[in-house]
Image 1 (tube, rainbow, N blue to C red):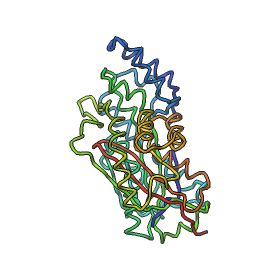
Image 2 (image 1 turned 90 degrees about the vertical axis):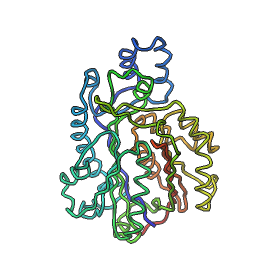
Image 3 (image 1 turned 60 degrees about the horizontal axis):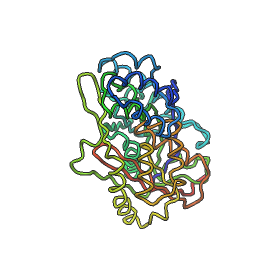
Length: 366
């Protein structure tokens, strides 16, 4: 079965404390909500200390057209994506040597926060001198579920092509979608939660020559995956596309949906995989927010210890949409894990949908 060889992350240059973003929101939304101080508690109670953004705070004080936002998105997404790919292919934590881009057979590019044709992956390939025959697989519109879905598609590709290697690159610049004149509660909550980030993963088939070049004794091996769509749930999460750009759709019912819907979904999947929830050592969950993490715990009967890594990523980075679950995965992969260590990768996104991936740390060839 295919395995994950290396994971890298890249944080954009502008780091802001949550206190600073709360003051910005107070200034912007105070005339729209009489109970602004009560609403601003979402900034303090969200268990986020700081976040990273592609643009400085001054950028958010001025209005921007959709073209201005998207042009900046393409420019910076390509720049950050190139840096993340380089980091992934030469990370000495995971790899004994620098992997060349000519050893990559396919590139999967995941995003939902901007638009580009040709895709971001084509633009990145031009910067890095990929082979012109490298297969390009863009994925758009899965939002927070995109990172886990991208892993599943990479695994499936390597199952079909066991000698080949795939790069998964997730790029989200959520902040560039910020709407200064949108005074809805969804926009306020989004302002308190979402951030920018990039992550890259290198996945190889079980006959890939790269399996001889890994540092760690074990790496996560793909065992199975499941995609699930909740019917008639388009309004739960996503974008409302208007002339001014992408306006966030973020239902207050999301934590409740997670609590009621996720448990049977996860249990059916694991049952089909021949394991129980109690067999899961690592819960590699996309941290959608504090309430979503609490809903995970209630739905699956997990302790706060099971969600500790996800909670720490949320605290340090906020919700970066699709790359966030790879930030969590990287934390698990950096530590040495025993043979047979079992993980469940989980992420939820617009649709409304869930993406689940079952992995197990296996011994690698050295």
